[in-house]
Length: 540
Image (cartoon, rainbow, N blue to C red; front, side):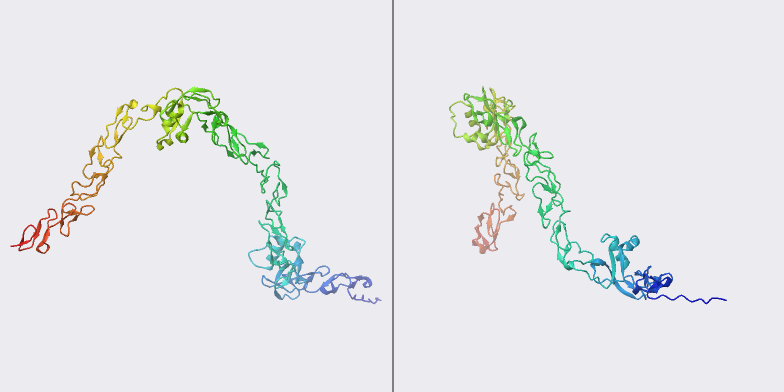
């Protein structure tokens, strides 16, 4: 005889197991119940997971999320029935209008970081932009919102990610005041100078304080304490003051250099100087030398440091510019002299300051200098020099102080006489006349008249007159001399209005009503018919 099988009771209220003593771990609003034997949750359409805790992803719907959505790229479908609606992807922590059932972690999205098409607008690509591009981290969550993301206070821009650079505050509507490409806090607007080199302050626009440089002026300069400014605010390189050099600006300038970092060269004549000031570049001249570059010797009457000592020599002697020792000497014109002492050369410009103070009756080197340099301003550009004993003149020069021959003399010793006329000059060596400043004359002696059709200095200019004139023009001025019957600037015009003769300067003596005209060259009247006489004054 078979025993009657009594069915097990059906568990209710999310219980299962023996005597329905166990509780199912299902999310009640996402499930229909659970298996009364195993406790496995029976998820509603649109939900999956052991507890029915997860909604379908935005691209699937239905029971077990097994149906594919057929929405546009910028839409999502209802997880239960697949209905499409427009949406946006937002960063969940900054967004007020997330659809609670449509949130994902960036950890989930990151599995597809390499599979997006960032050129094609889509919700998927927006998710990838947020989670894969560094705008958030894998612990962040993203969500779906209908239409635009409604951002929390102090957030805005794409997907409610923190304000774009340069903006801050509620709605990201306030503008940062940071300078030099510094960033600002998206909530407070406070500038962050940590990546700005050589600047600091509230707006990252203030120069580094002394002895600091680098990012936000956070590094200390390693330079001599006497430098100001201490170092370059960007690189930290020491900015050496005048007279100092070296990595830390502890070394003094050497080898005729001066200035900041010893970058300038002193303009001193090395053989005449001891060195130069490392800060200013001022030359330190040796005894016997002066000038900004120590380029000038003491004058013949002074010696020593700064040329401040007076020589005690005879009037025909000079003293050594360094130690004051006297020796006999002569004054010579430097450009014509072979034996100048190189350290004893003066310009006539220097000497000319004493032109009115000499005693030309008393032999002395000073008076010889005045005799050479004074009285002719053109000589101020000349230089004179001191020689031991007599001046040794260059070839073709001679006489007092090796000055070139006086005008009117030439040749060795300036003993031959020039033969030039009309105040022409001659070459002091060859005696050849120079007519270049003589008007209306030419030839070997500048005494020949200009040839036809030439005039002016050395007859070098051509007359601009009618070819029929002779003589053509004035040899001095070039003014055309018109022949009889011609007039005008170039003598091309015939005489008119009863005039005749050279340049039409004469008036014809004809009775006007009895004559036709007169000859432009001779002035002879051309009488009308029935009239005769030199003036056409008589009738036939």
